[in-house]
Image 1: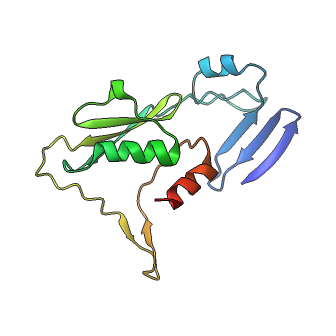
Image 2: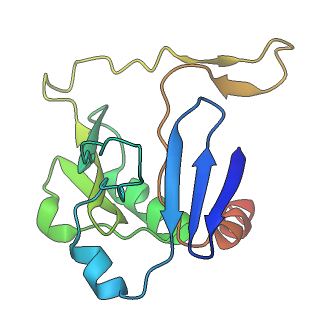
Length: 153
């Protein structure tokens, strides 16, 4: 990451892939929660970006998956509670932030459907399992506590 200080309350951050983010402090957290997720402040010489957000990601799981166990993992390790109102007998929705959910749902094509996550493989030395395919980044409230909770499993 490359970080540039523009003034006392504004940082410009560039990630390794070239995406630029402007990080600014807030005087009114209540107002910030009401703003559109993805909106960026306009800086002179820059065009405003379209505010985009991902509200939910649904992951299909086999019908023998333990939805309650998935919920317990996210609650106890990542501090992310299930939202009972959004779940059903065939799905569980996890709150990953104020406005984002991660939903695990039994595959809609039925219990005989094979759910194959083919992108899981071993690294070049065949020592450690690695996910070389799609992955997601999630909000984690307390990363250090999550590592401690995972170590206790």
